[in-house]
Image (cartoon, rainbow, N blue to C red):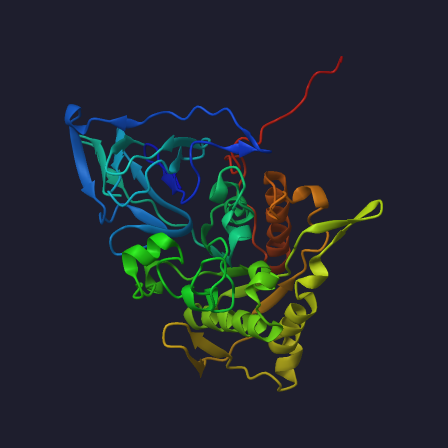
Length: 408
């Protein structure tokens, strides 16, 4: 996402699969996205390269300034009245880019590889004006998951996802989404993703075909020092593992989630980890709808958290105060250097969604995503004392619909 303004933040959202045509209940939604391409030769610009320190990169970007995973963006302030961005030739043609000025609403435009847009190859401001580095927020949250977390099938994908809503609606919070459609927790092929999150979370790029073309079998390990450590990490993954087509055993799934938690603790020892229970689809039984959630390892996930990470288990000596940490690059586990208080928490999603909050392809609707975002938000507020600072700026785009006709 891109945000910008005069002496405010420019946020740019780069989406991997969202394009100009938006389907709504199988019908094409009428849209009107502005064409922001310009001829830079007709302007007098001051140009900043992609590695300019004034540009803050949000999410995971590789050494070529190519973005990966979900909800990526850049943020900067600028002086003057004009700002433009040149997109590199590795940009996916036609991808929908969202940008906003400070707290104003999102605006979307279709990107053209190699073109210059009024809105990452470079950023330009009017001659004599400047880019300004915007300070980061003092707290950070990360979501790790698959298609449900990445916003697959919601209107604006990442910017309509529950994970984006969770971070954005907390306010004054840096947020990142390391999620990709179809990926399993277990390290195996799932729906064309050659590796699972227990491996890929430690790398810069995701498991897309584009990544295999660019990086082959040698993706760049992610440099965790590029961003401030996460204070809270939300893990919501397992629906792909749960699908019979991928044939992931209970043991392999729980082992993978355990290693993801150990990996998070190894990279961010002070982070609190929230493990969300899975929600699956619903089925009709007579004149009622019932959830398939019991098939999503609720007992196994709960017991993993309860028996491995609670303060009671530490007190009983069943769990050492120096937790095991895991490195997905070296594939090695080790004992943490410092004693740790319990840091893993179970969040039960039962009752959050009803059958009409899940679309035919088993993903939350736009409304469903909003509901999912609001529940862990309140959990975080109560559990960790995080105040809510978002007090007006738009989060979810095109959700303003109402009826104020009283006499019909």
